[in-house]
Length: 356
Image 1 (cartoon, helix red, strand yellow):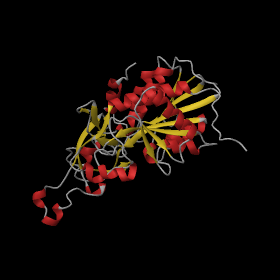
Image 2 (tube, rainbow, N blue to C red):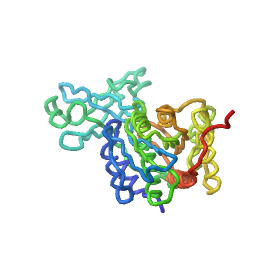
Image 3 (cartoon, rainbow, N blue to C red):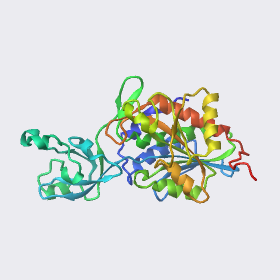
Image 4 (cartoon, rainbow, N blue to C red):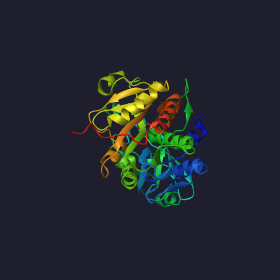
């Protein structure tokens, strides 16, 4: 079964900034409802799907659905908007970008306005892009505060308005692949496994608010209490910025999924993923990390007694920018790896080390 990349394209066309993920969750839920009976969006907004309940080993496969974005917090007398960050926004990157705001009566277009270089002195031109959001006006074309308030209310969410752009060699640029690509992958895996005979109680979660504290990862991991936790997120590709290889290793777009190694990740689960990849001739990459890397693998590891976790990452260039780039081949390989690995988990898997 080929991945439904038209579904991915529809998903990334939807603004799903952290705390405002519902439209994306509904789209993914509709793609699963013919295969999965136990399907719901919980009170926090996490999408949850479950098959084979009651099997002896409980597995949670998670990918967060939120993206970085903005929230309107002030409108001045001239009708210009000011926004705060939702998640890790790199402020200079948004100067002169377009912005899409969830308005009162539908989407509202705007721009992050910038000062013309003609009006700057030589010293000011060295630092054209502002470093704080409070220094950038959002222009929606309004003529006054009252005019703007007819279109946008305080608290409205927004995202940079950059969409799906095909590149060469089956690569795509878009905002927000971090981590709607992970939410897409985990639901595609569920679609493949929903009618399979499994040894595990299989739970898929598209989680909320990862960008502001792994929120959905914590709440769902506490509730599900999995034995094994598999986190699907994006990982830094170092092929475009080669100096970064000394920090994160040699990770390349098109090189296949990244499997994490380090103290956070359980050796039995990690080796199962590696062996599955080798057995199925799926190319994969390894990233060593000395501590948790800020993904929901950490949330699953730390709730209750702690799941045995593994991190599977899709290589990504230009993370937290409006032009993130992935390889669709890497996404497809990740789906194949996880589908095969979950089918391979035995009912009697031993997650404990040799006992004294």
